[in-house]
Length: 226
Image (tube, rainbow, N blue to C red; front, side, top):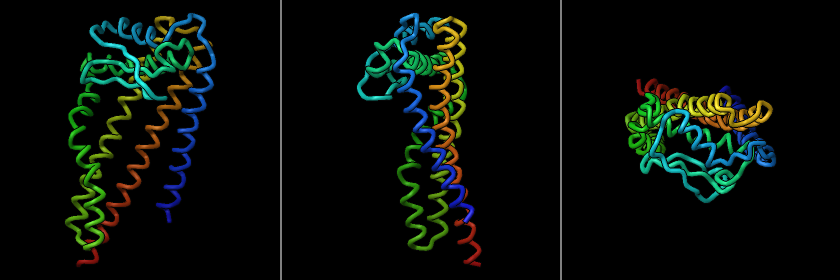
């Protein structure tokens, strides 16, 4: 019963977080910043402020698809961010530039996240299959391996949290320190990035809850075999 209560609460949080991201981005995408700074220009400003060079800035298709790709050392900004001079565009672009700075400076959590991505992808792909096989065959061994693989995805979510919070922190500190936005506009950029951060919190809580559930099932299977 407790599991379902917590699950419903976390699902509500997840829906609320997604709504906030869409709402805040849409709201501050309607407000031009008074310096007429575009997303691409804001990203460049963050890189300069941190002494980072050689990072590309390019357009990408889609909505809220902005990201930094370490494979080609490029910040990809969506059409609503790259050429846009809105408060939301500046906030999002600076956040992605924050990720580029993390890689350039060797920020430890992002190095850990990069290192575990292959095993986490493997775990994400096969964990549910092994868990289902374990339940079908009533095999604690198969189920246990599935739980271990699932725990890798939880680990990825756990490491992702400080990475995302740090990128937003870098973005907001640079926006304020370099005067990229006026004080009242800074508040809007913070609202956009705070809403995005909440989605990562909800994802981690969901993963932790399911992991705890699987561990309890694993232990109960062992007790039944005694």
